[in-house]
Image (cartoon, rainbow, N blue to C red; front, side, top):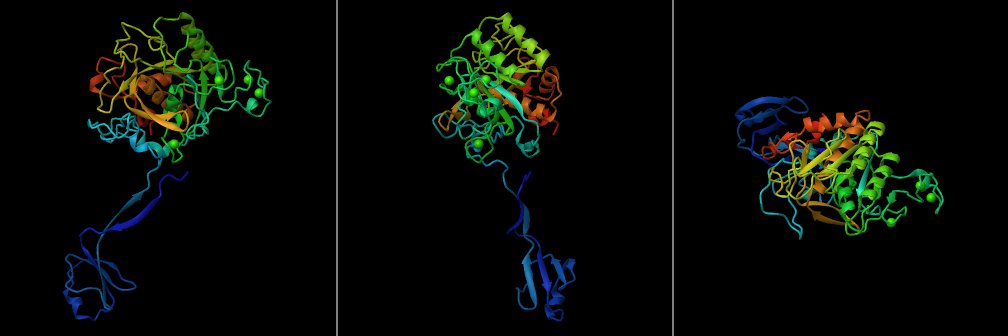
Length: 406
Ligand SMILES: [Ca+2]
Ligand SMILES: [Ca+2]
Ligand SMILES: [Ca+2]
Ligand SMILES: [Ca+2]
């Protein structure tokens, strides 16, 4: 894989001078105050300390010892990448919902620590990440090549459940709200989440965390983002039974469901599935005022609070030093929305998919990790953030470079 296009080019900056002497008998030869001889052939050439009193001629070539530097072509040319502060916090690139950027200065480098390692993320194994949500616009230019493909359905017959999984024509996932095989998003939330996880690195739109991912769209919520427990359970079961290793849950419910808890724990033990959950957006301490699935306290679950570009917890984020594990960017996140479009949204809904994407990278590097090992690695490799002290298990923010040990 080509990572960088490196070109040596030169730039005019005052420095020493170089003199190539084509006529050694020239009287100016004696005036040269040489620091170092650097060539003997085709003509003797010297670095001189001061600008010679003579110019280039048939007898001499005089040149500035100009600076050279690496011309590094950015690895990612996705058009809106400069607004993705979560991937590269430059301190001035938090997008505003209506366009432009927010004037509040961010903390340079307070991001998910991925930009230094873009070139090293070429793991072969494609991990399936299920987005249990409002669906995904699987035709979006930034997502269409990133979708999970149910091969038997893709090569099968219309109207037939070719793989016998109980769902007809479920090629990229399933729609459990409308009970059909097309999980097209009629809200925007699931598409936005999906772009964060895996928008293609294709010079268009945005860049997702994992360019080599397989996004399974599992729609169970309606166009207003409403769903119910039975739908959530069916959606989770579909994800688990159809091969997802990571499930993103950017949704919540107020009461604990012991049935869902049983199923999530079973999916971890029997299928090695890890669940990533958004912590919630009403500034509650989940240790005391729980929200589910965020506060389940399962070994195969990572709960994520929202970080802002100022390297602080966002004003809305839920937290909990026992129930919330780490944080990831969640304020003014630009990502994909239906119709080949992009929008800026905020919430822990946006934070969870950064972790889901990161976990999928970790699993593609090391597919044999257990959910608990993954969870511990995410916690232990988070970068400490003062404002999260006493508020999460890791007291920090996701850092992909540390997580992947790159
Ligand atoms: Ca099927
Ligand atoms: Ca079919
Ligand atoms: Ca549908
Ligand atoms: Ca893109």
